[in-house]
Length: 256
Image (cartoon, rainbow, N blue to C red):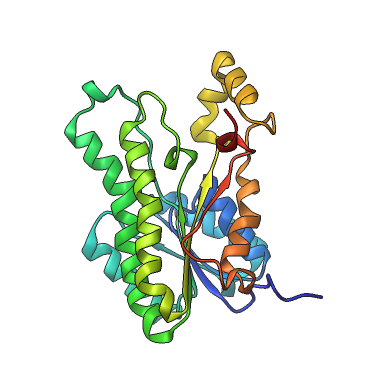
């Protein structure tokens, strides 16, 4: 049996992994053998998620840490705690993010700043903190979560679109500086994924019809659709893949 995508013995931190896409990616990594550090800001939800993972994967493979990904000191302390208490991180998935829908001319500065900080600056802060440990070891995988909004724009999503566009070039910047130290940095760009956070869009008959017609695969994506690409980018199977944005969107970004 091939071990190309086997993650046994690898330690992975997935930010925002107590629910939704982050949770599904964490499950995929764990199914491939990885030891996990789950992350979230809501300690109660994180504790509940960890308990569910422990029941499935065992106590020794599931850890959890709570810190604010937009707080530089908290990020550095959280990553240092993982490295000292749990072990050396092999994989980072920068998944945590938020959405805010409002016309650009009405968008408050504080909402712009909040979306940029949570979706873009956090990937810089957590990525930098983890890379400071990976670089001396000359090994590591960083997976940033982008979006179809990395390439496409829709009304009322200006801050989110700007942040996800920034993720593409942050991924490239990390690659330019860290690839020579045997760290692979790539991004996954999900299309429209059916989660609790998008349920209102799914329930909107007009919007749902537009998604089904706009997507060549003629369906919404599921969080599970992202697990396989994440496992690949976390594994030895992607050791010469660097600086790429992999669109997992049912073909949405390749048609007009």
